[in-house]
Amino acid sequence: MMSIHLQREIDSLKKKLLALSALVEEQLRRAVMSVQTRDDLLAGKVIDGDVEIDHREVEVEEDCLKILALHQPVAVDLRLIVAVLKINNDLERIGDLAVNIAERSAYLAERRECEVPAELSDMVEKAQLMLQNSLNALVNADPALAHKVCSDDDEVDDINRTIYEQIKADIRDGVNDLDSMIHLLGIARHIERIADLATNIAEDVIYMVDGEIVRHRTEDYRDGKR
Image (cartoon, rainbow, N blue to C red; front, side, top):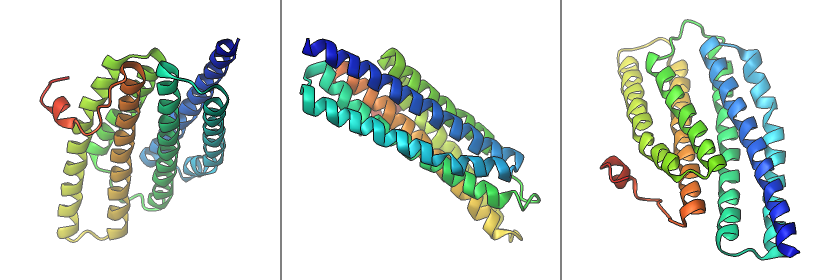
């Protein structure tokens, strides 16, 4: 009888985590769109929406702790709860980064003469796909897709370095609006961190499904061993 109750609570936990992930993905989409369209009103909606993410993150964590206390799960179920706790935290952090992007977007909306680097769109697209794939890997318990997310992180890092060098060169050449350049650097950095967190989620999926801890093994992905 206990196992039936445990399964019901785990199913409910999964649904809550997926609802949170959908909300975080939408927050990120809106934040990025606000940068691309210079829409300060949309940026404001992202900032206001962070309260809901924080609320849901706390609810998922409380449910995890309740399951651990009442049912003392083992093996696969325990790995699942541990993974959900970590993924839940990473999703909340991605939500915070979406807010940070929106805040910088609101500043840039007033400075339309500042051009957004063309590479930023490609970086955003890759980071969003990494997040989407990491969540799909979670839903489908797909470690192969999770491994792909881990290997894709280098591409985002490379684009971030390109943007950094480009903006650094612009600053060296004496651009008029230094503050805008700094905000653009911040946006690129936030997107790079989102890709890192998507990688964290993918690593937790691998742990959840296979029981394998793959942190600190980026050289395996880079060398094509995975």
